[in-house]
Length: 147
Image 1 (tube, rainbow, N blue to C red):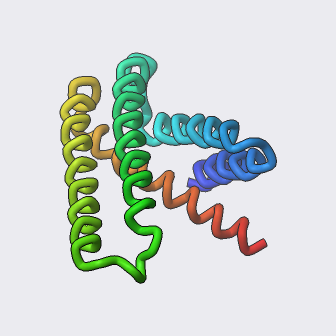
Image 2: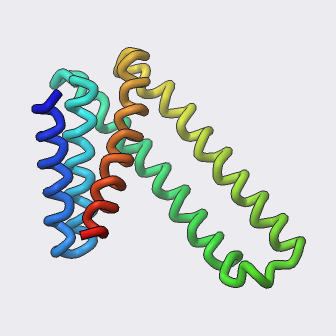
């Protein structure tokens, strides 16, 4: 367990070192660390990894596109939160619900795809590992900001 914590700490420390570089380089490094983290957590064999990561990349691309589209749409709608009319607020709420629904639909679609290349147990581990990675990353970012 101690060894595992040391490895994660080293990985996350590498992320912070990348903040001195450009945002694209940072994003690439974070993605590389995420791949390593998830691969380790799932204990993927080379065969499993070869099948899993292309499916994951498609999943990630769909989720990112959905988030980017939603962010662009919502940023215009929510520029003046205090001055929203009831109709505008209702539209924003409906857009938020549509976004969440689409996100769930993509997750359902790819859960089926993931199960074609991994056992159900490993698919569950994947979703847990993905959330765990995000929590660890946020925790380290918060600690870095306090310093």
